[in-house]
Amino acid sequence: MEKIVEQGILYDFYGPLLTKHQQEVYEACVYEDLSLAEAAERFEVSRQNIHDLLKRCDKSLKEYEERLGLIARFRENRESLESIKNLISKDREADGSRRLNKAETSGLLQAVDHLLDEI
Image 1 (cartoon, rainbow, N blue to C red):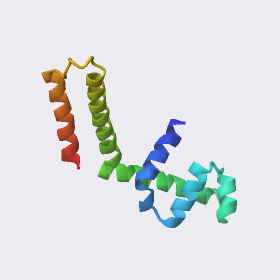
Image 2 (cartoon, rainbow, N blue to C red; image 1 turned 135 degrees about the vertical axis):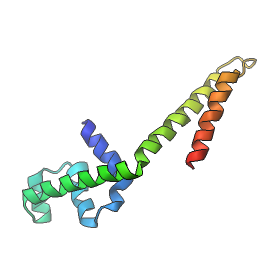
Image 3 (cartoon, helix red, strand yellow; image 1 turned 90 degrees about the horizontal axis):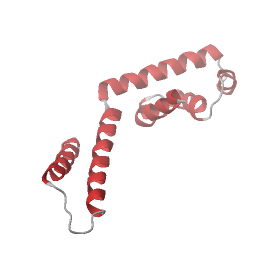
């Protein structure tokens, strides 16, 4: 299951970089869960051809991430936003007299600076 999720994430970020034919086959096999035989029938090619194409697509998508790192940066930004959200929620839950301490404020500012640098 984890492999399918990772394939989906890679495809979401880098799928448009594949050819139209690669996109169609990849979507059929990964998102529609077609077997190699079903995909081969639909696209009128051999099962081996489908298998090879999927392997090439997986390899290309992984190489795009290695070179560009968009998913890694996305995850870092998401973590920073979660940190900001948690700090703000902590302050909101207080009885009104409590404010963020210096360390929490510093953490919040660092997270914001990190996100601003990424933009």
